[in-house]
Image (cartoon, one colour):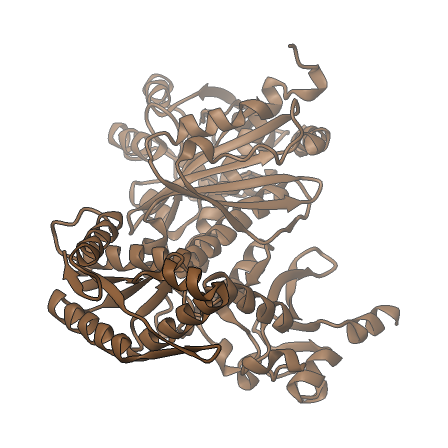
Length: 126
Length: 299
Length: 214
C-alpha cells in the first residue's frame, strides 16, 4: 500500500492540484519539494512509496532528478507529470525509468487509476 | 431557415469541410463561380475537384485549424487564389483567374469539439487590379513612361546585394542631354518635354529586355545593365551616343539635333556600396561633359 | 502611483496563470510537432503585469542582443483579448522558407524572395500564436477569433515596439517565452499582451479553474 508520497514541482498551485487529486478516502504522508535537487534530497531522506515529479523545474530539471532518483533506488516509483506530451518526451522519460507519465492538469480519475495500477502490479519497494 | 438563406445569398464563397477534407456544404456563390453544383461535390474530397489544394501548405493549415481552432489566411498577394475561377468583371481582364483572399476557421459541434472547418472565399480581383495599377504608377516616370528614380534606386540596391552574394557583374550608364537648358530657353518647355520623351524612347529601344532605364533627374537618365561588364557597357553607351547623334527631333516645324553625354561605371569588389557606384558614374559623366560633351567616359 | 487591487493578480492567481501557461504551451508544443512536422521547444513562459507605457522598454531590453528584427503582430478577440507579438531575428524568414518551402509550388514571377520570406514568417507566426492562445483559452473555457497576422516592422528593436495599441495608463498581463525550432537555427521571442479590458474576466476564470480542485 502506498503511504508516503513526495510531490516535486516548482509551482505551488501544481502541488496543490496533485494533493487535491489524491483519493479523499485515504490518508497519506505527504512531502513536497520545489525543485529537482530538493526533491532528490527529500527522496533520500524519506524513501517515499511514490513520487509525483514535474519536468520543467529550476535548479535540477525533472528528467535529471528522475535519473538521480533511479540511481539511488532502481525500484523507485516515479510518476512524471507534464504538459509536454510529445512522443520524444514520453520516450525520454520512460527510458529514464519512470513508472508512467500523466498529462497536466491532473484529474482525480487519472490519479486513482495510477494508484490502482501501482498497487495492483505489486510494484512496490522492498 | 434564415441562416440557410444567408449562406446562399451572401456575396462570399463558403465551403464547409469535414476532418477528412470532404465537402459538407457548398454555397450558391461557389456553385455559380465554379460551375459545380452542390449536390455533385458534397460528399467528395475537395481534392477530387481541386487537386491544386493538395499541397503541404494547405494541409498544414487545415491541420492547424482542426488542432488549435485558430484561423488561417491565404492572402491574394502570395496565392492569388485557392479556387481557379474565371474573373467575374471586366476589371479582371488582366488576370487569368479571379483574385481571392481566403480565410479558414473552425466550426464546433454541440460538445465543443472542432468537427468541421469553413473556407470563406472573397473576390478581390478589383482591389488587386487597382493595386497593380498603383504599383506600376509608383515606379514610373509620368512624362516618359520609363522607370522613375525611386524604382531604380531599389533595383540598384538589389543588384548590389546580388553582386555581394553571387559576384554577378553589372554596370550603370548615366546619360545627360547636352545643353538642355538652351533647348528650353530657345524653344520652350513643351519642346523640352518632346526631346526628353524621344531620347527616352530611343534609349529604351536599344536596351535588352533585362536592362532598366530610369529618368533620374530633369534631363538625366540612368541605365542599369545586369550581367554587363565595363566593356559591354561602354560599347552600348557608344552605340547610344551615335544613334542619338543621328536622330532628329521635330517640334513645331523645326528640326533639332540633340547630343547626349555618358558616364559608365562598373561594379567590382572595391566598390563599397551602391551609392559609391552611382557617384562613380556621375563623376565619369562629369569627365565626358568637361572634355567636350557628346562622348562616353568610363570610371 | 499605486494600482488598485482589482487591477492586479494576487500571488495565487499569478501562480495559477503561470501553471496554466505551462500546460497550454506544453500542449501547443506537442501538437505543433504534429502540425508542422518539426519539434518546437517552447520554454516555460514567464508571466508578469506591466503598465502599458513600460512595455516598449521591457520588450526592447528583452531582445536587445539583436540588431535587426521582424515582428509579427496578431490580435485575438474573445473574453481573453489582446495582442500577440512574435519577434524573429533577421534571417529567420529565410530559414523558415527552407524549412517549409513548398518548393514545387509556383507563386509566379511577381512574387519576390523578400515577400516569400515575409509570408513564411507570417504563416509560422499564425500557427504558433494560434496554438498557444488556442490552448490557453481552451483551458479557461473561452473561444477567440484572430485577426490576420501582419508584419509591423523590420528594423532596429529600439523604435519598433508598438504601444499605441493599448490605452495609455492601462495594465497589460505579459506572457513572455522563447521558442526554438530544434532542428534549425531558428529561435525567437513570444509575447502575449493581454488588455486591461479582459483582466476581470481573466481573474474570474483563473479562480474558476482552481475551483474544480477545491
